[in-house]
Image (cartoon, rainbow, N blue to C red):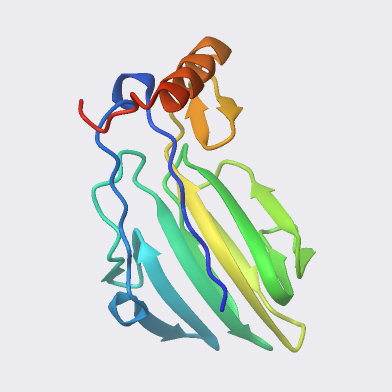
Length: 168
C-alpha cells in the first residue's frame, strides 16, 4: 500500500483556522485516457474532468499519470503557478527540453502555460503537482509549518501545554 498526501501551506492570516482533511476514496478519482496515457485527476481540472479535492486556497493541480511507451501528453498550468513532477516508476521526458526524469527523481518546472510529458521508455508513472504560490516565508519544525521561528516555538509550547486548539 502506498500513496501521496498533499499538504498545502496557508497564508499567515489563515494559519490558525480549523484544520480540514479531505480523505478521498480511490473510487472518487476520475480517470481519463488520452494518447497512451491514463490520467487520474485528484485536484484541479484536466481533460474536462474536475478532481474531487476542493476548496483549497492555492488552487492546486494534482494529476496521477500512467504513461505507456509513445505517450505524449500536454496539460495547461496556470501562469505563475509553481509546479513539479515526481516520477514513481519508469522514466518520462519533461517539457520542451525533453529532459529525462527517472524513477525517484523530482523535477521543479519553470514558469509557463503548459507542461508536456512524453514516454519513450517502456512506461512511466508520475504525479504532476502545481499551485499558486503564497509568497510568504516558511519556517518548519516537526509537524508545524509557520512563517517564523518564533511562531514555531509558540506552536510547540502550545502543544506541550495542551492548549493547541482548532478554533479560529
